[in-house]
Image (cartoon, rainbow, N blue to C red; front, side, top):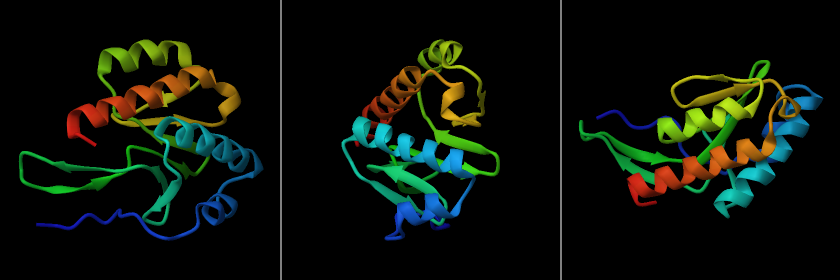
Length: 139
């Protein structure tokens, strides 16, 4: 069975943020770090070379594949900041209606800058995502 490529590392979160994106993205990522740390109660940790994660959980799929992943996470991807969220779809969709300017993939919330979003709604999304992960995986 293939091993996960994205694992927690000892790399510096501050160095990652400082080395990526523009000044606005760096400031937004520092704010996002505070938000996710507040929600999870855990300090940030690098996962692989480009994901900032908070807390962790173990999962096992029906296929037998298992691994570890962060409960909450974000990354700088080109012009976008991506927050990784796993929520109940109904809850997620209701919150996304109030969030502001964003794009949503299956589990990825893309936005250009925090000022485009209602940060209190973003925090609710992170809270709901963390609750969902803990309920589903017993984290």
